[in-house]
Image (tube, rainbow, N blue to C red; front, side):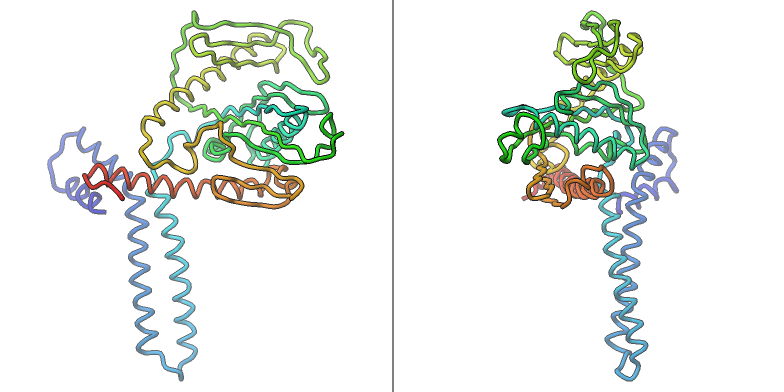
Amino acid sequence: MEEHRVISRKLQHEHLSDSDRKALLKKHTELQPVTDVFGSIKQAQTDLEEVLSLLHSGAKDEDEHLTQLLREEEAQICSNILALRKNLIKALVPVDPLDSSDVVLEVVSGRTTGGDICQQFTREMFDMYQGFACYKNWDFEVLNYSPAEYGGLHHAAVRVAGEKVYRHLKHEGGTHRVQRIPEVGLSSRMQRIHTGTMTVIILPQPVEFDVHIDPKDLRVDTFRSRGPGGQSVNTTDSAVRIVHLPTGITAECQQSRSQLQNRDTAMRVLRAKLYQRTMGKETEQRNTARKQQVGTRSQAERIRTYNFSQDRVTDHRTGYTTRDIKEFLGGGKELEDLILDLLEHAEQEALLEAVEISTCVKGHPAD
């Protein structure tokens, strides 16, 4: 608030160069949402003090109607203050510039005895995200789909495009665990609860990002697309796999009958993976002693468990639990509620981290 007042005075009274004025205006604009919300909170607190003063001084038993009105106004103002405080947190949290980006989403089957439980779960997760994309009116473009036996899925990659896709999906990346008695496949013969895993990978695709790739660092392989049951769905080598030799990162696409189109798509995915690798290093360097509970964890860590025998989904980062797995895997409101809970916790943690960084910069290390 003090910084906003200082900048406002400078903009009004001081002679500034065009570059300095531009920089101050930019900072002034960034601070405006915070000052607006904080100003509203102060005004609401003033209104609350006035109402409490009237309640404690003027309202007697003989004027029950007035007392009731004041009580209702007190409750309304308190509720408003709580909502404004949540808005203040949102205004204070540093904006993630990637939030509005589209993403490449990959689902990868894990390994366990029998294997089919992981592959079946991976297909269900793929269907869940497809359902969520439909629920959010996002585009869902399949780039690669490698089916497995018994209706399962080894690996799939899709491009999800729409409004603030990365903001909603960025915390889905990680290892998801399933516990169930399999209904089909080799594991189903044992009639006991099996545990399997699959991994979700979320790669942001910013509108503008530049990743330099030297063509000499690439190995391009072509092969025939494969379909369910191992049958060939293409009689030509139209599927493309591109390997970035310095890093070993691989991207492939086999959805189109055009080799050129598949190559372009695979290059888009490869660029996104290389961009994510670069951003991951920068994020690791920026992290302080306090780690965000949500958003900075390794994708190799287990983040969520789907327990079919207890009909329960639990997110281990926040403790959020919901029932009715079948409804949850539909990818509708139940999944969105969990995602919104994750975002709220992430904002609070990001704010705490920002406070700690600010305190350390000022020379007063936080406890």
